[in-house]
Image (cartoon, rainbow, N blue to C red; front, side, top):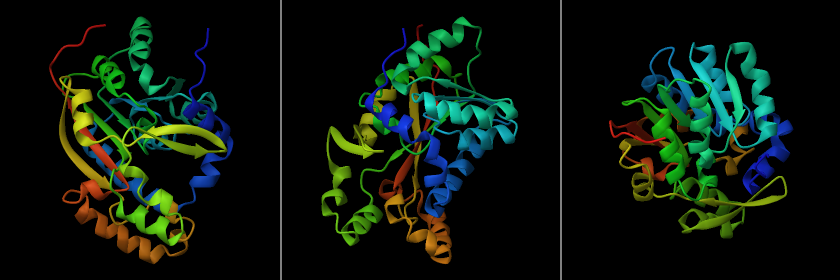
Length: 274
């Protein structure tokens, strides 16, 4: 029996056919994606076996597959996986329906068919913010990753001045401080309602211990504005290039102010049980 889709997966399922055309042209998204990809390439071993969580339509998985990585994309939305599969199959990569919070069950299925452990894992553009409890995600990744493998997890930042300014200018003050909210916060996409959680650093470290150690945080979109600034910022590419150049110097010291934050975890030698 197929598990019913969770509310966030239903929302992304609805928008999957137009997701790339709606968000793919936004230059702010492209700038933030470049920063994440540079970090992935630095950490993942060449031609490594890589797992993606919440991979959506497969843009980042395709990027890695084109560069020789053996990529397996997972996403809770069947429609997203269908779109991703059309991109990945010609590149020799795969996509499967699996929710991040079900990574333990996914690991059992994966190893039951003879799968090998992964050399790295990543998640981009905050699908893990749709997961209230990250502990099952951590336990699943602990079983799936080799000792010493990196887990590169990009989540929403919890204090984003760029979003605060943008939302105030757009006369939406009720959204300006939403990331400060504790617990589940309401979200809406494709006229579907679901919830997100703005995870804090300490909560992340607690969820992923003892199988992972947090090595560093990287701000993604400290100067580059959030997607709330679209389409205006895409109409000013020169300004955006300046902001992207500024980001390269601010990603470390001001990581907590990013639109997104990349949490670079490392798999420890602590064993996990199946």
